[in-house]
Image (cartoon, rainbow, N blue to C red; front, side, top):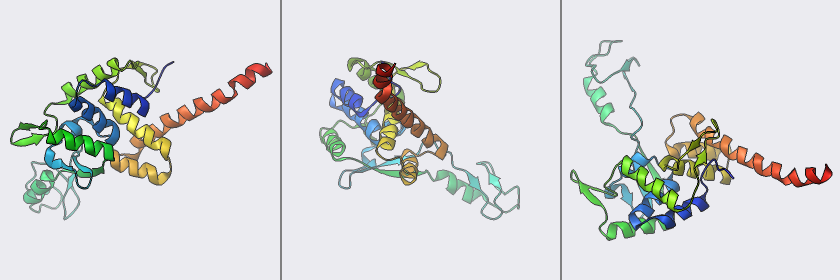
Length: 233
């Protein structure tokens, strides 16, 4: 039996297969927030608000698009004067490039408890003057997730678009969150909320998850009639 995505039950198995609470928290943070692995590994203790149960994500993937405030001409970092209207824009460009897109995401109660315990136990790592929640980068996070998947006995997944096998990775945890969210509510308002939550610039990217979720629905529906058709034949 092949799988095209991880379910929340699979995620629980991976959490149980984690070798320590740090690795368990990593899996939890990606799968219960839908964040990119680079966003999670970039989290500092200051980004966590335990009282309100939220985290603040720096949208590292986005590139700031800067336009002239006077005429709307697209600008780049090197522009001192606007090529469209010739007005000085150096300070405005600098300010815009320094601004990083942020989004604040809610957390469920159990994840907040795990974060609080992680911080109280002194697990965050001091790097470059910042208290990092995990203290490692993408490569290490990929290995942790992959190893937990193997110990949990989970098979490789099938890419629904190409039919090729792909291993379990942090992005598959992000996929699991998105598909789970759509299975709970696939209304237009919910999809827009999911787009904002995931930090997608394009709605088309979010809509791809809906296609996968609905394909699973189709497979489930077809199975309802398989026995009847066999008996009838």
